[in-house]
Image (cartoon, rainbow, N blue to C red; front, side):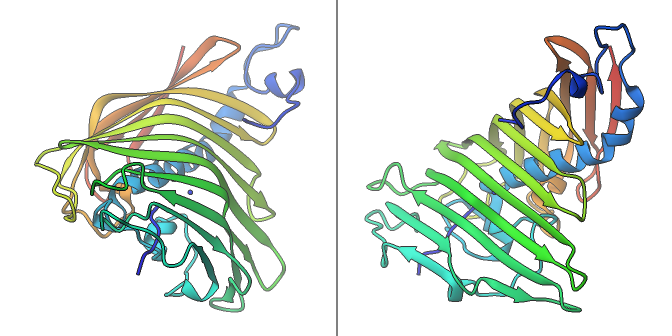
Length: 305
């Protein structure tokens, strides 16, 4: 049986929105209080996106496994408590899929969450899965970790008994390529958080994640420990403020393969990542994230320019 691995900013943001972060034409100072107040949501949104991206490399323990399990589709912290299996509401096309190299990555497969993808879990809270994932093998005659994915309105919606809602939806593309003991994931993804259980957010990632294994990456086996680097851009629209960051890994993030009981981004045991904030081409400061132990949240600090 074949299963699936691993989830532009708002238009029309005017001067009034930009003044929430930068000095405006009338000479007013940047709103440092707004940035400080938004920092928990900024940090949480970035961790969600980085976790989803890293999950492309480590989901299910190896990239050759195309997994429809909740752990693969919704990394910890992003997924609701999903029932297993999910096959009852999945529409797979074609079925059976073609897989000439027998690496469990189909030549082409579209998986769509169709009707009856809603269910309840605990005290009447309702969940609904949405959207589709298109998975393809760029080298269908050669077994390996290489794959391409396209996400269309892929996510979930939660509704409480009091009719409060939260929804996460992803759109975009991801590709993963292997070269010896190196994996490279290229992503262009947008994520929207809506509903009345938290602030409205829209994230846009355009970055590359490289994984350099400490040992040889063996097809069909769990990834070894190794170093991760993230490079690219990340935009976040939050509370009618749009902020743009350049992402740079200053010290490689060490992935600990023995740390398996936490979400992928919390399997980092050391390393430092910088997110440089710029508005209208002017650098405003750097968000520094430092990991020091597997399974623990990193420390975060904003250093203004």
